[in-house]
Length: 234
Image (tube, rainbow, N blue to C red; front, side, top):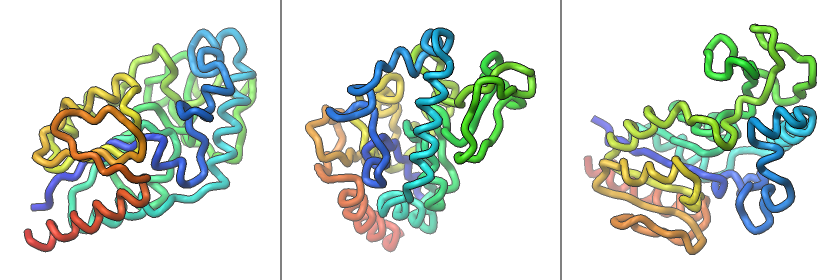
C-alpha cells in the first residue's frame, strides 16, 4: 500500500511560475485594498472593480506554466498516495498532472452564482480567456461572480482538508507563511510521523516540523530525492 503524502501549498509555489502573491512585501494586498476586492461588502459596493481584479488574475494565469515543484509533486503519484491541499486559486497543480487537489480558497477557472455560491448546479467551469462581465448570468439568473472564497466567507473544503491531513503519513507545507486562517490550523491536524515545511523565509515553523529553508522548487527537489529513497525501501 502506498504511503499517504499530503501537501499544503501556498502562494510561494506559484510565485516561481510568475504568479503575483497576495501577502509578500510587494504582494497584491500591498497595492490594493483587500476588503474592496475580496469581500462580500466590496462586491456589493463595486462589483465591476471586483470583476476587473479577478479577470486580470485569470488573464495572468494564461501566461504562466507549472514549475518543477508542481511537476515533481505530480510525478510522486507513481509511488505515493498524494493529496494536495492548496490555498492557491490557480490550476497549476492540475496542469502539472496532480489528480487529487483540494482548493481551500476557490478556483479562478470557475464561476458561480452570486446568490447561491455553494450549490453545485450554480458552479461552472469557464475558459480563463473569457472575462466575467456585469450582466453575465448564472443558471439561477443571478449575476455570475468568481468562484473565490472571500474574506468573511466560510471555507467549504476545510472539513475534507482536515480529514485528509489527519490521514497523512507524510505532511509537507510548501510556500505558505502559515498566517492565513483557517488553513494554518491544518498543521495541528496532521497525523503524520514526518512533518516538513519548505519555505525560504523566517516562518513560524510548528513544533515537530522540519524546516527546509529553500524555495519551493529547490526544496521540493531535495524532498523528492528523499521520498524516492523511502519508496524504494518499501
